[in-house]
Image 1 (cartoon, one colour):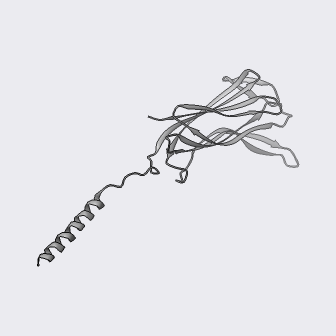
Image 2: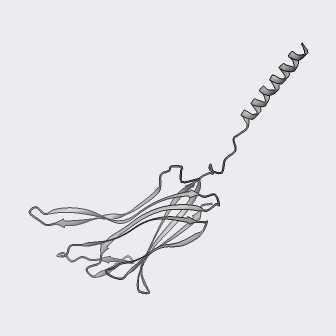
Image 3: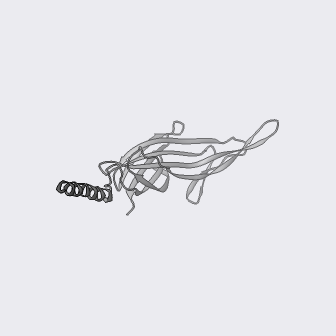
Length: 192
């Protein structure tokens, strides 16, 4: 009879111990970090020699998550217009070409607290073959009616490792026709 009481006490002890373990909240592992909101600013700067001809800033909010193995949708920004182009021939047609800036960005929290930005961008514009006029402080190419427009395209894909409030000059490219330089500066900061 005594051994039945001991056995019952042992079974009850194991049962109660199992309940207390089941009620404990699981601890967050280092891979399951919380999402962190980031402000990512891209500035496209164009220079002709030492003279800055344009500076175009774009800002988007990106949510940084824990690790590149967790799928997420990138933050995207699309800014531009459609330019009509006359296609000459037997039956003249108008075709539209997209011109503007397109940015996609994803961010992941690294073990050391920095953020890995996966960034892709494209900036297209009408190539200035005519005279230029100032329109609201921005240089605009004016195409003569008898000249077909040419388009300039600047495209890239980057992976940057950045910390809070850091600015990186990530890309510098030179246009082979004009010698103009195009630079991309990226600034990342944690939204508090």
